[in-house]
Length: 399
Image (cartoon, rainbow, N blue to C red; front, side, top):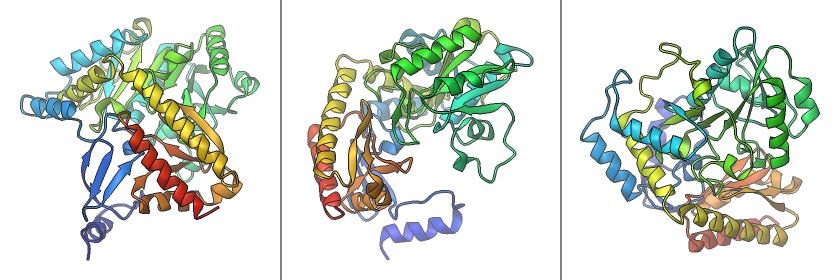
């Protein structure tokens, strides 16, 4: 029995079956590469689902984590810690926000945003409008906010106070606004439903709608934030500023951390005892976040992400032209891109991902419509070319 098979057998005996896993136990990572227990190397264009944006085991992040773990690991939020304060200072200095709440994941950051929207809006105003195709997390409240019925199945009745407007349709959105509405929540680019960007004009119209009706605008940037789209936050390139912003994933480059950002006047509604998180802003996770932010804010880093995104988009467009029966185009921003599949291609989506895995390249199939490419932001042209060569090989066997 191989080492991968051994770990798979042991894992299947003890894990609840909530994941469909590849038959590989990953044991080591470096940059854009992973190695499994049998010593096989993989080129990672999934980045832990947009988490390891500086690549696996980045030396600066590893050093920060090890140094902090040897100094102070946890004291709870009954006390101040230097890494947490430094991270909050960096986030507020480089965003619209004045205040920060720290949690452990994107779902927790979104939970905090939903609670803040309700308490700030006052009694009787509790309803949040989100969009069809959205994904906001796996807790009961964030599942209810998620505009994809497949995530609701089996968990009904969901918490009351969440409604979904049709993606891209302003009239649908405006019709849902009522006396109970407190906020509109959306992702600047929907990742899980197929890499679907929200156009700047659409987001600007949502902003105006919120202003007209005195609603809070919440941007879920759990996947699009932290440099993924070519700016530190996606909202920066869209000309629309939210009232509340949520982050997670790439913030810790692998350590669990989530953040909610907002203005001071809104933050004032959360007073002592209204919300909390035992591990939120843990010193080790916060130290990782500080290292990540400093690296991303360095001269040239984000410009490099934009250049790499343009190169990847161009190479994927070439693939679409080469295989028109399987792919129809490319969409996304920065290094969050989807190769849009035709009906024939969608039928082959899982097989394509499996074929890429067999070629030693990791991607995934999102929204039953696109092949999603979310490599570490440090990916090189040579690594992109290697991925494209594998993709051409796999698609060539299916065309």
